[in-house]
Length: 306
Ligand SMILES: [Ca+2]
Ligand SMILES: [Ca+2]
Ligand SMILES: [Ca+2]
Ligand SMILES: [Zn+2]
Image (cartoon, rainbow, N blue to C red; front, side):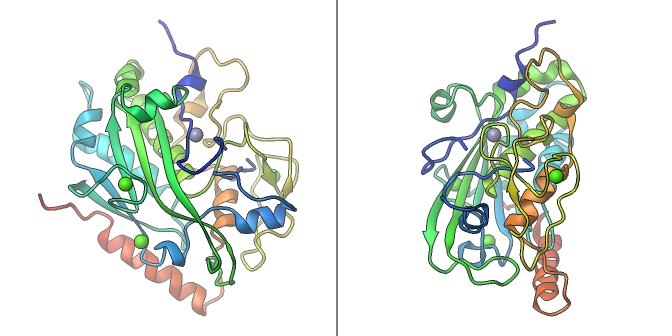
């Protein structure tokens, strides 16, 4: 059996505005200079300024599920694998509002839904321009905002993500049919990885890696009222983290368990909660969270009318 190198399967990313592809966690795009707290505060993320209050509207283009089907799959299973990868990121501060069979997806990070999902073949321009992105690619659009509040309500200036396109490579998922049922776990993992980029996270194996200590496998205690406190640069990242694009370490030859991870690890949770702190107090924070959750629950399964 011939395997492609794992690092070639799993996603790389490129940004329209990022000069380079960006554990513990890393940031994407990598902007900002200065102390970790300064860089983390300015780091690109969604905010109330860029449409986060009503959740992030995601359009799963009509035809995406059918394009990714291989013999033995059901459309429901493929759709479920993609949706699971998106919803894996949800928290009281971060909700997605998914439209299935969406007719309004448009290529261009600031056109269509806030995040559009496409399934295209290897000869699509985005994959031709990024040959290392074998399974998927995220293309966010980022601008600087003088008024871009954090999800804990603190006023803040910094980069805001205003839209993103996510491309899944039809050819790679046909190739991955050799994995049988595990292929859908890989699909979920790739969707988690690409949506991680679309909310501002990078590859900890390639970019500056942040942690609250030097152990990349433990939970990161984040104070939502002071989410950058105690976060430092660490040389140690978890090679199996979903946001790594080399999930099996330096010499992958065969699929490792990490390829099939379908839920967030400590790195991903820590990165999400630094960028999108969840205030536990019952005042405005909880109301904000409940509003997002209620909206997500009500609308996330909406299926577009043709
Ligand atoms: Ca929105
Ligand atoms: Ca778009
Ligand atoms: Ca740690
Ligand atoms: Zn990537």
